Length: 287
Image (tube, rainbow, N blue to C red; front, side, top):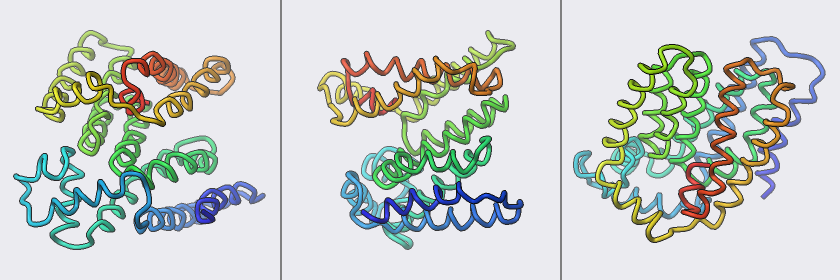
């Protein structure tokens, strides 16, 4: 348990250094901090609720070719490839987890360094995104990490890069495709053409990534009412900051496109509340 307190207190302590370090020192700090978090996450053993599910995927990947692995080793193509390498080349589950951790932490640090107070942004990510999600749910964590890159691209007005990052995230966890409409909602010019363009990509990604799993997912999550015990908690974790944003949005120093983006995200967070009545798992995945 002490390691989790240390993971949080390490970056928190750096907030209290009175002198602002130069660029070289900052780069060294982020590099060393990143390596530390990568190895803590990547070298964990039997930690997280999905640990044995991931071990099951890895065992089923032994001696399996790439073409016959889909369905047998999961249904997320990029995560399948990591398992095939881990099971058949070297590293086992530690290879899979270290690569996953490297992607997650690199993305979080990149996103944090784009924020006005980068260290504070990283500290905020530690309790939940790093300790809970990254330690327990590798596929979702990678997808979330890559989605942070997509957000930066979108806020910079680069829709092509945004689409690229969302597609990469969806190869690790299918729910990432729900971000595609953000590009259309954020656009301020050629709206009709943008809506058509994003719509076509969304439909193609939906068919390619979900494929034959569409019916299975609907039956599992909606008709059979598969539930997530922590779904309501995670939904309301987003509702509180969403309400605070609506209250203080004009006092947070956002640029216009940033304000618009976070308002859209906040509306999505609030929309997850009625979704809990249909399927807590679906609401959980989206939240």
